[in-house]
Amino acid sequence: MSRPLVDSADRTISSRVFTDPAVHALEQSHVFSRCWLYVGHRSQFKAPGDFVQVLAGTVPMLLCLDDAGQFHAIANVCTHRGGRICQLEHGNAARFVCPYHNWTFNNRGDLIAVPRQHSPGFDKSRWNLMRAARVATYRDLIFCTFDPDACSLEDYLGEMKWYLDLVLSSSAAGTEVSAGVHRSIIHCNWKIPAEQFGSDNWHFQGVHGSMGRLGHRNEDPLHANSFHSWTANGHMLISVAPRREIPGANTAYLDGLAQQGNLSDAQLRLLRGSLVMTVFPNLSFVYFPGLCSIRVWQPIAADQTELWSWALYNRDAPEAVKEGIRTQVTRMFSPSGMLEQDDLEVWTRLETNLKSMPPSFRLCYEFGAGEAGTARPFPGATTNLQSDTPAFAFYKHWARLVGQDATP
Amino acid sequence: MKDEIERLLYHEADLLDSGRFHDWLALMAPELRYWAPVRAAVSRKDEQHGEATRLPLFDETKVSLGLRVSRLETGIAWIDVPPTRTRRFISNIMADRDDDGSVRVKSNFVVFRSRGRGEEWFAVGCREDRWFQGPGWLLKERKILLDQSTVENLPLFL
Image (cartoon, rainbow over all chains, first blue to last red):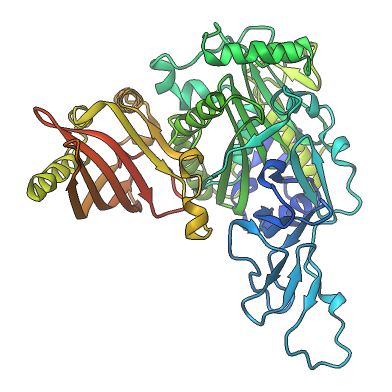
């Protein structure tokens, strides 16, 4: 029998995990059809009838708000011949008319009209759009799942909620995403960035060495608040304390948030540093004081990912704070961003290399395997900032879902 | 004036394509606003609505552009190791003088980019500039309208 894609015996991962179209197909049916997937933010919806085009795995979907205030995630794919029933990225509509034969659906996905219908016994109710089994929200984030037996979203997020709350509920008013989204094509597998964002502080000195050399790295890796954490269901994050706090408009804003009492003291301390998180499978956040991006790594093909990202800020933050965050997100974490450019470049090289290697090629996730765990007063399992262990936990969870884990 | 503006834009393109970024920066006014809105697949009306507060694709000042140039000079900004080859084609130039003496210039661009041994792609769009004439020409404002709504890595000066 061939070796499993993810092998716990020697902590290696097959390069096929990142390159093989068969593995990509397998994870569509075993990962993206079973997990909770982030599809939108409440602030994108202002009125009943508002809709946004989204992707759930590879499936083109519409996330719609109906008259009763309920969200529906419905496939943007006509049940007749597969036509795209909605052409606009976002807008407001109570119904969608397929341009091919004018089959008409409401924003809950029901087939409500077929023009010139002359088919005795044709039962419209059998031809509603494919839809997510469930849609649920955590704070202002909207998720869907195709698995009717999935656990609740709250249980799915589990201990990760404590960290998500840092960026989602420091203000009682909640958050909003920027109007406008950055979309870019990355020529690599979606797991490469998902892994890095949740578990890899180590890459900064290599990939972003240019920014470090110019004095744009403010990290204290040995601080008690600098650690990796990972939780059940494959979620993971990086917390890094600053070497020194840089006073500015944002410091005063953070001071004000501390007074509101929505977060614990421990959470507020982490909010002074940086947080980079991945919610399994493909939702990530990057937060620095004065910068916050929420991003989805859309799995287009085994070797292609589309990154969709927004600036994220408190709904009641002053306009100057919001604008500052938009600017920092654009300058650092956008297709033109000084940090993101080098990530994209390195990830692309990595994918090209892995595609060129024999299928037996395996990658090392052994670093830090022998370290003794240090208890830290934070949720999840934790370790220091230079370890493959959190990333390997992500892949072990992935492997369990696709049936490729060797360990008992 | 049209000829002079045309020479100016061709000169600027030449500086960028030959990697003379400091000379290019010298064309920027201290109060430069250099930005690009993101594009979206919505109606023309919806796309123009709220453009200024939408998440931009570029949002730069002369200082932040300077940081980008310094970054390229470290030799470890991987997006430019080895340097990207670019070739820009500037056309459809229209120039009009404003009451305050500035010149509004609209131009189209095609930028061909080639990296490594075979990665090639294009950036296509138009620019709306405001240039001032002192001892030399200085760029005070540039709005870039890229025609791609989903972009590739975009480490370019446009």
